Image (cartoon, rainbow, N blue to C red; front, side, top):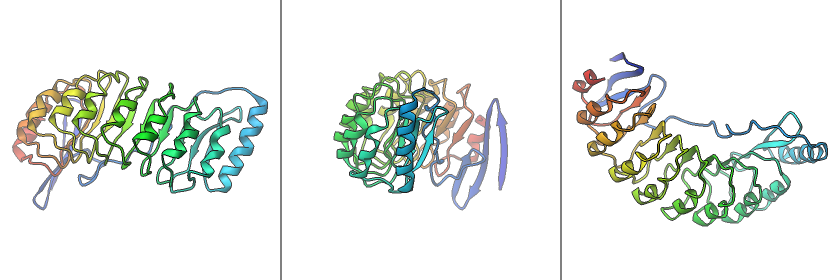
Length: 288
């Protein structure tokens, strides 16, 4: 059974699968968080330097020979490197040391460690760094402290913990932060309360709970919040309801119940709400 509801600007699909209630947006399944592969949004700048362009084209050719995806701007400068799938390692990542115009680097699944971050630390033009599924830990994140332009930092399933939050907090321009599947807790979020530009944070599959939501409520720009498979309970619902700027919220696979839905219905700008594999019943739908 599937029913589609529209209330204000919130669109949901509601159905029953086995004994699980599914309340999700129309295009996402409830058993995993929606994929977000849009790293590198901050690469729009264009520069002009003919000599550097020639060097960057040569560098891009070397990287492409290794299977790396490269993007050049209109002036021929290397601005994005995507080595997802293990194309680069601690040794050959040294090639990037000369990429003086690089805006985004994606190293998802690459066998890189803290050692490789010394190279990225010297690329002060970087705005987006993707380290999902790597062995970069707290020390590696700390090595990036000097990247003053950083707007996106992706650290899914890396061996970081709460200590990394001290370094993350040093990037006031951060707009997107991915911490899924890490050992961070509420204590880490308390250190991130100063990230006033943060718009999007993924905390799925962490031990973040109700106290962490209190810290998140202090982020005025936050519009997208992923709490899939966290420790959040109904007690956090009033706090979430006070985050009136939220447009996208995922509480799949948590213990929230109908009481939480009644609070979340108050969010005036919410467009997508995910509540699959929770304790929600049919009675909660009327609140939406």
